[in-house]
Image 1 (cartoon, rainbow, N blue to C red):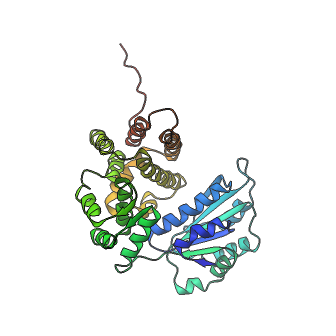
Image 2: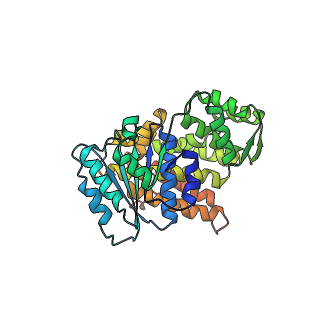
Image 3: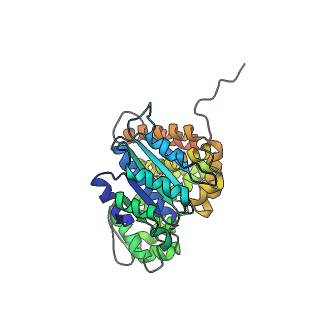
Length: 340
């Protein structure tokens, strides 16, 4: 079954399919579609996740072996099969067809692929995936579609933009979809929800140099602690909501944990970072070189505890948010006592 990217969450709510195929060359939408599937499987008890990269010399028997392997730690698992060029080849096609003849009940297969041309979509393996599960093709958003995409995203985040808001933002981001998504999140943080006027957007854009949560994230990844402290205190003084800041931090940490796991599995750093927007590559690279996958997972669990604090549990959410930012920057929370 083929569905549009914006329909995927509703499709997941109806139940999990045995296989999903997310294809395309637009990294933001592809990444969010994959994240939705990961979240959907976690909510259904799929606690184990295995990532496999299809490269020259890839052993396709490993896919079938992994699908049939019994886990000591989880009864249900998600297998991610990454095929950057979208061409599994003869052996890969046979393996996928064999898998789909009798997909394991306790396993969901997520195939992540580059753009598939018409010939690829006529292949037997593609048709088998489309028949047995769900396929999603993501397409670049062109200049004419950008205002509509931005408006839809604003409304999904609880804002009601007046006429002209989406067009103003589209002009500001100059066709960059990731930049558009970031501008939307800034507005969510700076506005209390409800109606959103052109004047509010213009003011937010004018203040973006001092009000920049995404800048805080990159500063932490770069390890610039003095600048990080100034930005953090500035955001707190401006009344940014702790939950809003935590949402941005947790999303970034989750993405870094995923990339770090790919690197530990043998994937080259440059290939792992293909989804990273050009201006952010230096910061993300620094973060990945500073912390391994385990450390990022530990920070993600820490973010979960901060979420409970921000929602009323005993403790100071702001203090813990600062500690989390410092951890990202590589500052140890507990320093050894100096010897006399």
